[in-house]
Length: 243
Image 1: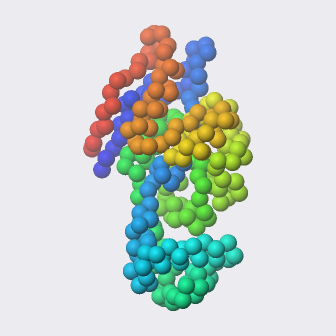
Image 2: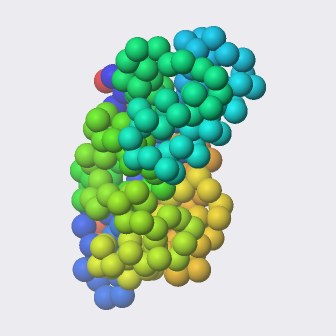
Image 3: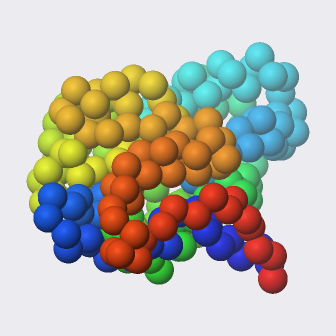
């Protein structure tokens, strides 16, 4: 099992610096989908095609009908039955539960990212989560235990406001109880990063684990420019230890 030792990630930053003018540790806020995890959407679509015996195009039309029915009914089974009926389809027995299991199997943690989160926590950083997600999708993620490392966990299906609306970030700051300039927000969507920056929150648009690691180091390096007597030195190692 891979165990990330993020040596470059501020080993000397395990507490707030006490010297005059020093900065507090930032709170790191992560998006979920696209940053911490990936979903095999094509695999789910292929499952639907195979089980219902329909084409890719028909699957697309079925999903459009399902989205409309979900707005009318909170019962997933009812929404599926009405969507299928509108397309002249009959669903197999236990369709919703079988599909749920396939969706759960399609959610995969992005390599190294959860290890990074855990390493940050061990070093005393607060890690939070701000995610646009439906109630149903959130339940999948919760069942997998992916929300456990984060506090607070702010989900659009619970707060009623989605990124990039400014209120989503204002609510985040209210919950964190820190000024905007002490928050680093990580998201894969440029529009969300820009919205956060308008409120004074530092933002990193996620592309890859390596890119994020470099971006975090660049942002925190100036904080470590303290006299050598303070005992803080910037490591140049990017090592990953496997055990």
